[in-house]
Image (tube, rainbow, N blue to C red):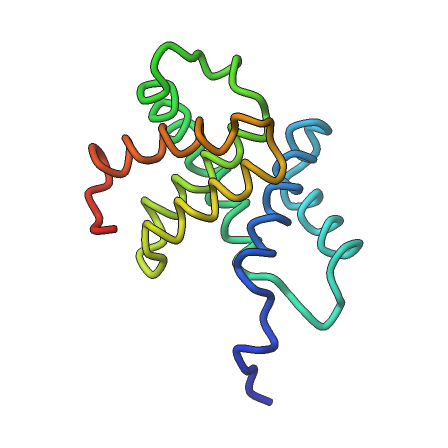
Length: 145
């Protein structure tokens, strides 16, 4: 049976779930595949597998050092460990999308990251995330918005 686009989980939800998985992995320090599998078993329907969630989590972890260097370089005097864990993971996820997900327009990535920051971060998270990602988009990524 062919899957329709309505059978898949919306990317917005996948991003929220990926943020939760990354947070869980940061806190528990458990094995990535085990943590991802346990999360999906507990919070997703058995009939739905979220490939975008998996791609985001594994991509962020695979390229984390590259992303962290970019975040530190473009965050203007903010050392990485001063950036809270939620904002750090939102930035990493957005960088994965900007650099490795050609099919996603940069404007969508930036808007989604800002919305995640506003929803899960502090009062200033949206602006902070926007500032860093906008600079990286303009100076590193160069994809048309």
